Image (cartoon, rainbow, N blue to C red; front, top):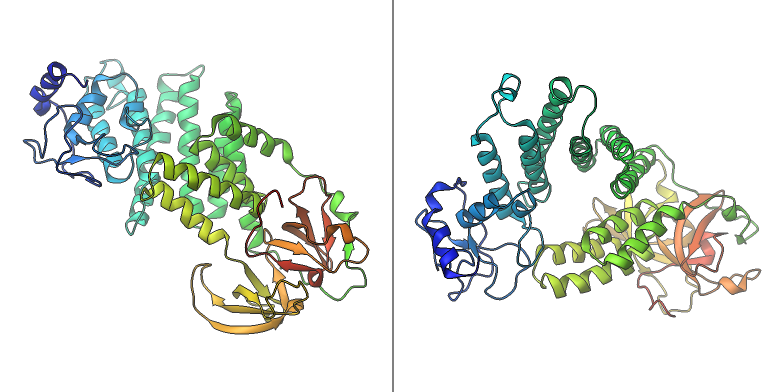
Length: 456
């Protein structure tokens, strides 16, 4: 496609292709840039500027929307509607949505089989695929209009399911092809994502369970595990709305390892995801692993993984790419340590832990400085208060470091995540896999604000 003879052929046929009216992003456009398909500089005859929103660098990857539509239309399948053929990364934002809308229009305008026309307005299989392309584009839209895009995503996914249900009644009466089952599962996964973002946890669980069961029916283990992680996370969110926070007290023992060993950890699924990420080292697998770690309150491993993803994204996408910025924002959020207060039990007030009042690293601090109440982890609202450490109700997933333990001195200085609470103690799972989870009193652990290097 880079040769001039091929480019001229594409350029001559521009007006034939269907496009959307909205211009795509021109982020990074320089005067020297030209369309990699038609080789022309500046806007085309439709007034579309050359645009780029993928991971190409320098002056590469720019193209007119109309040229991208023609290119995608000439290729089999639907990957080319979503992925840049140069950098092999997904298109993003308005450009991706423009391409998805063009894909929808071309599918609707395509000739229809007379037999299928009895039951369907458009070719049902191709239309379902085009709807899925649009779902993916809408799911990636961010910014102030995201609520509107989420509503459009829900409508599009529901239309996918409606078309599939109709195919089951009139086309695939005896058995449904695996491809159609996968589309149905993906549609329910999108609906689960919309419901989760709107805090409609019951609906999210229902759609994610349906998606998970469909993936299981066709033996798609990777997507099954991904959706299963998301479903269990939603179940935790739903349970947490009614579950009372732990209330540590002044019990006589500071640590116990027996109770922590009674609960079985679901490590098999995480090990599979870890191995996949280690082998593939791609962002999609990393994102799936992040979601799984979040669902298990493994903040320390999440933070270390996010730092790897940020480093790789800066190298692949660039420092100003929204993927990189998204990972950086996620890291900023999980580094905030939040708590509730014993003295404010009965309220939903959350506080941000700022520091220990004697924050000199000696590990003997009995007072902690908090700010709140806050409405989000990154807000700076509320009063600055100094409270006793016994007043803290440590949030699950908070990284801590143990100190002043007399009967288990080998745990002093060891870091781990708070995963649960039993009676007057918190269940700490240590980063050092050789150490068993233990129940530790609040006064014998200190919230960890910055992680040490892993080999320390």
